[in-house]
Figure 1 (cartoon, one colour):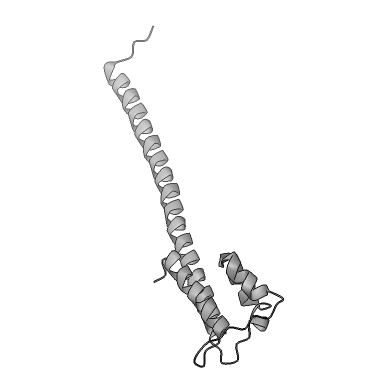
Figure 2 (cartoon, rainbow, N blue to C red):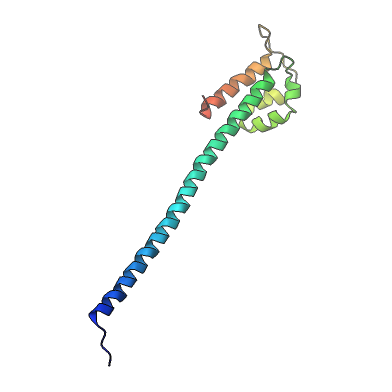
Amino acid sequence: MKVKSSNQNFIFMSGDIILAILTSTAISSIATAIITSKLKWGVEKKRLIHNNKKKLLEATYKEINKPNFSYQIFRISDIYQRIKPHLSSKLIKTIESKRITIYVHEGNHNAYSEIIAAELNELEKKWELI
């Protein structure tokens, strides 16, 4: 019968402890990497959404401020289709109405463009772009 010396037991236990520490460190590192990448993606996603909303509003403002702006042309445009889900149902009904509505307005501005601009201003506040 062979008896293990206490020195061999110490080395065996030290190996188990080192293995446990290395395993724990590896698992912690992997978990940290996953969590960090998810947090970075969350921040990046918010930044992309913010920038996309800003670009959408800028494009819409550009369209409605054209000197020859026509709501009839605007309502069939790509920009309108992109901004439409964010507009109020009242404004959508106004833009898409088959009836001709005449807005009396002073100055050189198109009344429709001003109505749309007012709602875009509200979206800017809601989306915290200003």
